[in-house]
Length: 182
Image (tube, rainbow, N blue to C red; front, side):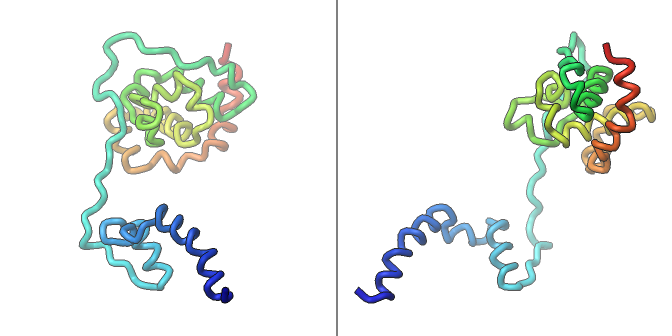
């Protein structure tokens, strides 16, 4: 058997597996991710202005203030040794009704069934999600500046919460929350 034939017999299953994962149809118009990466690897300029933008999905939140009792957030004391989580849960406990009216942009409504940002803090999700932590810090600061839930949501929709450095914010406020925590 020639080397050429042997090499192709060995590589055939690998190519078949690759086509199963990334079929040629993935390079067709409408699959922008693969089409762009292939065009980029060739050095082509990708023109997007004639394409319709991808529809934006609105994250889950409650459109009105709560009418009944809200669930409690987890006790921040559980996170006493994790400064960002500790400060985030302390703040979440203070502004539950506002968090009830705000979406979470980490898509936890899709993978965890959350109905608002409050759900991130009634569970352990807020402990490790930097996006949720930035959101709660941002919402708290905006509420202290006198903004309403609707105004805050509009700023969050623009991505303004991404400007929050969670480590820096927690470090700046840790002492005040450690003193006030039970």
